[in-house]
Picture 1: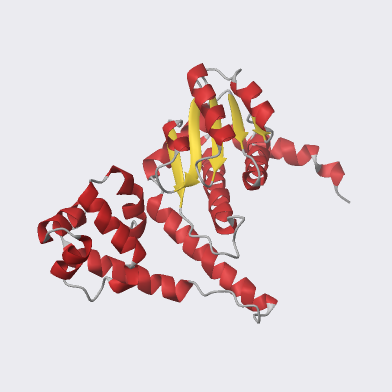
Picture 2: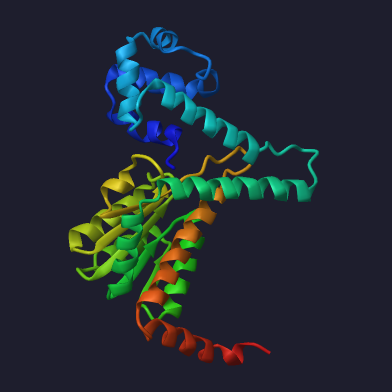
Length: 279
C-alpha cells in the first residue's frame, strides 16, 4: 500500500495554493493531525472544510477520516520499525537498528515501485543490444555491481562512473541500447544530462531514484522508484542503496527466468571461465 506521506510529497508541486498549505501543514505536523477535526485543520491552514476533503480525494482517499486512519497506521509502523541510533549503543544494537531501517526502506520501496515499469525495464534490458549504467559517488558501486551481474548473463553491459566518460558514451548510444541512470536525489546534473543525451540519440532511458518529482524522471522513459527516509547517521543513503540493489537483483532474476536457455548457459560459461581463479 502506497504511503500517504510519500504521495503528498510527490504531488505537492502540482497542487494549488490552498492544497499546498494543507500539504505543508501535514508534513510539518504529521503526528499532531490525528486528534484534529476537519474544521480545526482547515482553520489552521486558512481554508474551508471542502478544500480538505478535496485534498484527501486528490490522494485517492474517500475523505478526511480515511486520511487520518492511513496517517495513524504509517506513524505506528514507523515507531516500531525505526529507532534513533545513540552513542551508547553497542555495535550489535546499531546493526539491529540499521536492519530495521533497511527493512522499512524495502517495504516503502515496494509501495512506490510501479510493477509495469519494473517489467518494462527488465524486458528492455533483456532485449537490448547494449546496456550502459551511469552512477557517480555513492551510486557508482551500484552501477558497477549491476553491470557485473548483466555481464555474467552474457549481456553487453558497462558501468560508467566518470562524468566526462558518461557524456562521451551517451553520445554514441543508439536505438536498441538501454541507459540506466542511478541518482538517489534525482538531481545529479551529470547523470541527468547523460540520460537526456541518450534519449536524444534514441536509446531507452531508465531512472532509479528516490520517490518524487525530480529532473531525472523527466529525462527517462521508465522510472523505478525507491523510498528511503535517511537519518542523520545515513548520510550516504545506505538504506536506499540496498533498495537499488534489490531492484537490479529482481531484473537479473527476471532475465534468467525469461530468456530461454541463453542466460543460464552464459552463467555456466562464466563459472567455467572463473574456475582457475580459486584454490
